[in-house]
Length: 92
Image 1 (cartoon, rainbow, N blue to C red):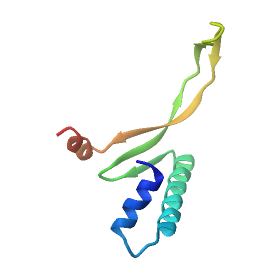
Image 2 (cartoon, helix red, strand yellow):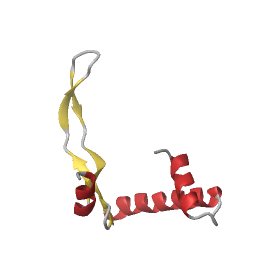
Image 3 (spheres, one colour):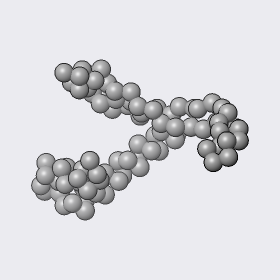
């Protein structure tokens, strides 16, 4: 699903909102979620799942062009864990 498709789906549920307003609302929602992840390291949505910041350890890697060994630095990423009921609904 693309952002445009999401806006159309939400606007279809709430016909009294314009697509522009729905787009602004969704942008504000995702900005708030991103801020929560940066500040608190976690965002939980009951019945959907939990987004959390995870740290990847530094590790050796290989340059695919030259084959030379390189050191990949530590980095942060976001992980997602499904809520149990949502996971059950996906699996039948």
